[in-house]
Image 1 (cartoon, rainbow over the protein chains, first blue to last red):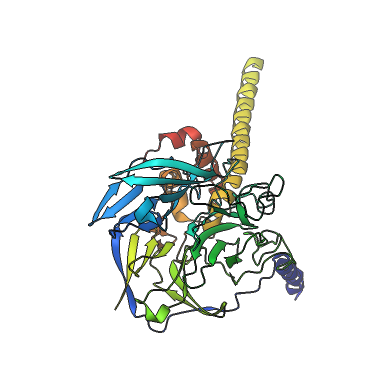
Image 2 (cartoon, helix red, strand yellow):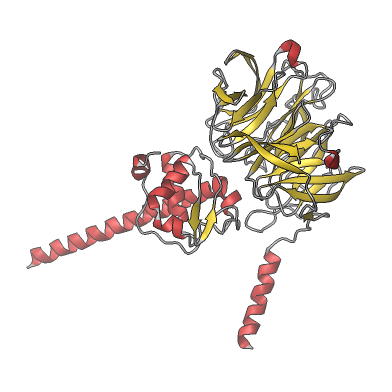
Length: 373
Length: 134
């Protein structure tokens, strides 16, 4: 009994020291029946970060360690002239995206960690270039976030185009949550909007704000590794990593503050909290939040006719639990979640290709195509 | 006799200083390693080195880590892929190349081999990390 009396206060202290978290409103389930299966189409790629499809159906793949791979007719070719990539921690070669009018102008866009510019270390950069044979040409660095830092975290990054031809890309807060994400005079923890040639649109929300980084479109982000145009509404949808708990799905709106780290559904890795609040006026609520975290990377919204069971669903790769998450939405509310292909590997990317098929990239394995049974 | 005694004293104090120096170097390396851990490792291996069951192997009381010094250094230096068995459980995931400096690899090794119940008296040095090839 004496022992018990001694233990009780200890238990109370332990519980109160750990911040309480509200779990996701909808729990993830095992799938009932999956009418689709996966086929490994590009084997032996360590981390296939980005994936784009050329008009001939061949693939451009960015490998985190720095290679740009052209996969055509079963053969991988390394493309020369790819950007100089700063490989450290979560940084490396990141996303690749074709211009919506690629067939006429040939522009290909890349994000990557780069050590160019002020300070030691690296930060996220955006480049465009053209592919000529097995070489990139006409390379232009359109944006380089700064200053550099040797921190290993949170580079982002994904690229998306909207229906008006604007380019959006994300840069994470580079492991400096108390300095970067809430300050619009600094890079990092931001979604940027540019014209396709890198010029800054005059109607960007902070274009006329003194000292602001004029390319910023939204802020208060942690580490967005999913960014895609909604195939029906044309809106830009995003997901981002929270800390421990608090990964989010957001619809990106002009000039909005998504709250990191002032509001969050997450807590520190050691179980302590850094904020007591999950909402605040002037800060956007996520469309959905994950507690516990799945560590989302890669985002697709299914519009193709190849997957009638999944039409309109959101797909997100889970790095942490190594599955593909399918989220069913009704009126922009998540009503069902399912884990697909569990155990396939840390899922880095999800893309719906122009031919309507969905491709997923699993770390240490390669790229899989999802095919109907 | 006096001479012998003072020699002994000199020898003993020399031993003491070098042992103390090594302790201090280790202590400082562990401190730097803890910062590297927070930055690069904690998202997968978690705050107390417990890992994530089925996904990321534990470092705390890990037989793999404590019995495979060279392999562990190589994994941190270059990344790691393929099946490993840690405390009787099989893991088969990829750990990316972290891009750490040799000195940072040494520091984080000293941290993880001296935390959460692990102990390692033999300090990992930058020179030792430099020697380990892919």
